[in-house]
Amino acid sequence: MSKWVLGLAALALVCVSDNAEARGRGGRAGCAPSCGSGNGCGYTYVTQYVKVQRTINEMVAETTNEQVTESVCTPVTKPVTYNVSYCELVSRNVPMTRTVYKPVMESRAVTSMECKAETNMVEQTYRVAVPKTRTENREITTYSTKTVLVEKSFTTTVYDRVAVAKSATVMVSRCVPVPCNDCGGCGGCGGPRVCYQRVCTPETVNYTEWQCVARPVTRTVQVPQCVTTSETKTVPVTINYCEYENKTEQVPVTTYKWVPVTRNVEVCVLRPSVENYTAVVSEYVTKTRPVTTNVTTYEMSTRTVTRPVTRWVCKPRVVEETVPVTVCVPITPAPMPAPVCAPAPCCY
Image (cartoon, rainbow, N blue to C red):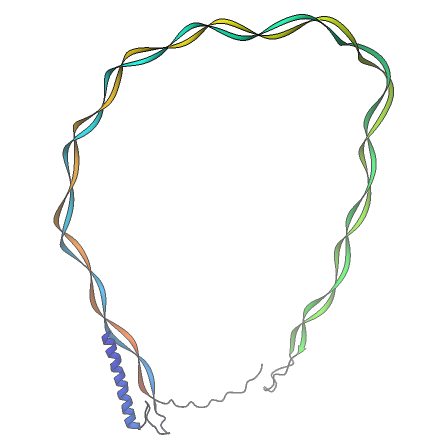
């Protein structure tokens, strides 16, 4: 980067020295000195591209084998004996006393209410329905239904397709001959010319359009219809009826009364009694016993091994770049070209 800056500064000093010389020779400020009118000389600024070198720093990976110290964790298993507490169920006999209720049957006098029936002959009068029959003449109307065909008329709408003649004005495109303009300037290039031009003209065109026209139509159809007829006639009818008569009889009448009755009944009674018995009582006793088990522990140890180690190192590198530089250069006037006269154009 520093070399690139130094290169730009050197180019700027060169341009300044050239400007100073130009001022000394011409007596005016600027790049171009004073020139006569006959030679057409001058100076101008031109951008040129110059290759310069500069140093850049980049990170480079370097891998080397180095001696490193590692910590290793190694498992070690050893038998360890320790006491374990546990509970053991122990049973023992214990004398106890309990009260037992035993059922005992005993006789007791119990008074209860009973419903007793008494039947007595009582004279009662009641009405009796005696069935009888009689014959009467009555009118009966019977109804019958039959199906007949009845003519009915209805009006419906029918659509007819009718052709209607119509006309319309459309634009028609045609090629029409038109006179061509004279080309001129050539003294006669050929015979007469005919040009064609596309022109749109209106024309009337006749066409047929189909339309739907509605008209009413009356139609008659046979419709089935149910007709009910009635017929009245006199027929003899047997009528059943009842006549009520009063009768008196001696009938048994039963009545019920609640009467207290005392009886001796056997009743089950619970009597308490004390008994001695031996009960088996179970209880838990805490005991200890030795138990040997394997216990794994981890021990730390160090060792020296060779491992590849990668490091990033900053290293300089020279690169070449192209940079723009503005310089002052003389101008050499170009010769004037000879005049060229073109012929007159001709239309074909």
